[in-house]
Image (cartoon, rainbow, N blue to C red; front, side):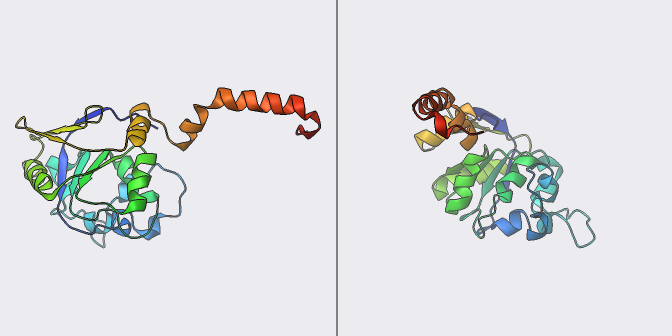
Length: 204
């Protein structure tokens, strides 16, 4: 998993509330177990019409936001089904951070497991960041995970909270497998000791 330390990028404003996981990645694209390629269908039903043509009014189709790495979202982002394809699609598109007043629990947890930082802020802070984001590509936002600070284009800053364990995992690029591999030496030591004490249990 790619480390998340400090991100400076364009923030796309998406004030719509209750953006669910089926809106993020519709069910017809869930047939794959690969994490790559899903970005092409991120927000598919909002980005494209029935003929596959881009809907110009959708924020990520606008020139200023095509390379957005941050989403400033409305309340209850990621609600709906628990599909892990939702953070996969966001990440494959290039989104590394989503900022909202609230997230659905399962989506929130899945973000951390896939290298995306979800940040919860009060509505007044979201309103300020939404205003910054609406200014387009020239108004980049910096998210500093180490210091837990969001810096706006005008020099203002907003502190945010994040669980210390999840922060550690993101800063070091550790998913569930990576966390297990941190204990590789202890696992090897246990297996060697166990084999010496009970050699008849050794796998053939």
